[in-house]
Length: 159
Image (cartoon, rainbow, N blue to C red; front, side, top):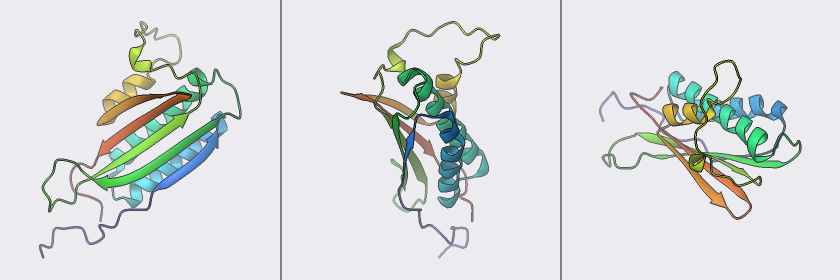
């Protein structure tokens, strides 16, 4: 067996968090997702990018889907899977993060982008998601929205 393969290729189990629409829930959720990515042996840059995107997505759910209302449900899941379309012997992985809300159900991808005013906060969440994640998919639900974020493992995994 080649010595450059990671010794621990076991992925962490699936993570599911049931939180409420409250900005105080964002940081703890972000930390749990970052810990999950670290356990899956993603590098520090990918861990930070995943965490930032989860942070932005949750803030957008609270702000836009729920109009700032507190106490509304949000379910966040994380799962590590073998990367698609790679050689069978590869240890490459992908992290799938889903964020489910029961808000307005408006697909942000269908909205006309507003001109960004540098003097006003906000407006960078979708840009952040699209730039830092490998796949961003909004799946409208009959009673809200499901956001799927995918991050590919790049480079050598942490050992």
